[in-house]
Length: 490
Image (cartoon, rainbow, N blue to C red; front, side, top):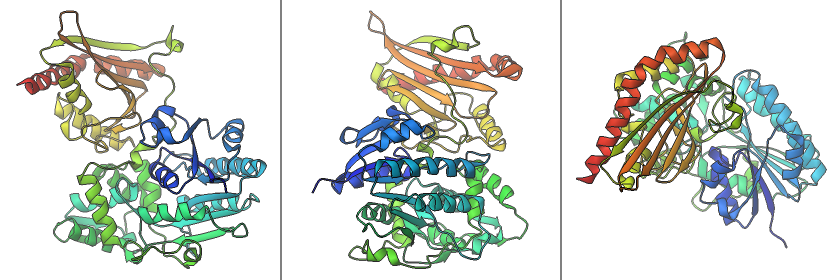
């Protein structure tokens, strides 16, 4: 019997990036559909899969990606993108459903949210339910797995829980902290996803999936504090905190931006407890049973402490429409592209200079006016941007697609070049480039370049308003990076 050919969408996202190696281990032949091949190439599994570069909004691309596929893993979503993300998700799902039917795909597997009966659903849960309906109506046998809160290193729900509990010994919370939740470990989610590929052809339905315990969000926080060795948290519940206010507060306290936090918070008003356990008929529990909440938290914290977080919510595409173009594109010819360029010689090896550059951001900071960076980060959070709290996936290593505070790694050539694209709220597009070189005399050069493409008059005003501070921010940044590299020589 030939191996199952599986197409994984959302393969550079949180769940998709972890699912691919599990499918390979189970003997699947895997194709991934991605928008940016460079992001896929940063994963260890990239040489073992077929990478199809395409746009999920293009019928032609979706049709081509589906050719010869047995199982479609549909893991795309538009949460946190603002606007009518529900309509966007439904339209995208319909496109994949139609092309899966046309291609003769034998099964669709979709990971959605748990849908409680008799409750008014949040927009996020309602959209997930509608996507499930579209896929189930496709005429292709479909497995819709409905999960509540997923516990695993790097998941948005886990990071929100973790940072709220770690940073706030006393919390004023809305009444949703009493909502009953059935959390599930990401390892069990992946096991269900892989096992769903082998369901009988006459099975096409929803399945609730949850861990072995039902807890309130308040209990999740107190149990997390206990596992993490923190004092018991004091919780003051009030009825006046709206989802909007809660999401902005979460945006200020945690790395999860308000745009992503809001749909997560709104979903917490709904009870997410499994109404059945039928999935076990097709994907039996492992020996020892499902992973409980305490163990899932311990596993996640161990991954974080060991710098072994393979995927993160911030690895996925940033909220909002992606920025267009690159600063090297010929399309910029004739347009406005402001530049601030600086070059200096560094009394350190290229390797030591690169070590400092690659470690920039996160806990290491930006090697210049710390107060200015902090203020800019706070202002960005207030207007819905990621701010500086997002940090980094790994403090020593960068790959394309990584988030670095309010930047995103757009290109990196190990030991020589790093380009970051700004994701803070700006009236234009901005990049920061750092390049390591050498001269014929053997000295190390450090080239530093800030680029800005303004949008409208406000963009031009913004550049000239901040230009006087470039000498302080970027000048000292280059000097201090050079000093840090030189210190490594001692």
